[in-house]
Image (cartoon, rainbow, N blue to C red):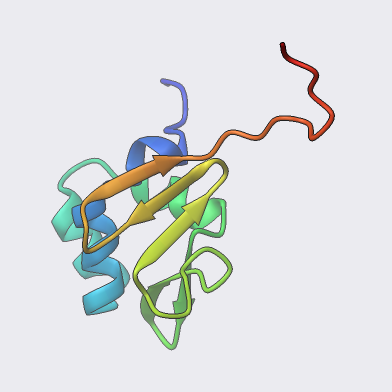
Length: 97
């Protein structure tokens, strides 16, 4: 058996928009994914998608209230702009000269 799929590999903008806009059933999501169910299990097990009354939704913990962006770790995925920003933090007391 191969290594489990990392959620980062499943965070494709078109897939996230599909989830945001359609709230598919599990069967509809799996039909869209084809024979591989890896992304479904990776997103579900990490809580990035949740089941609400039989429909899949992007987690409100990661989806902005306006639905325009999805945040995961160091990524901000802009769903309608088709852009991904990577956020890097440095300590405030960094003394570079």
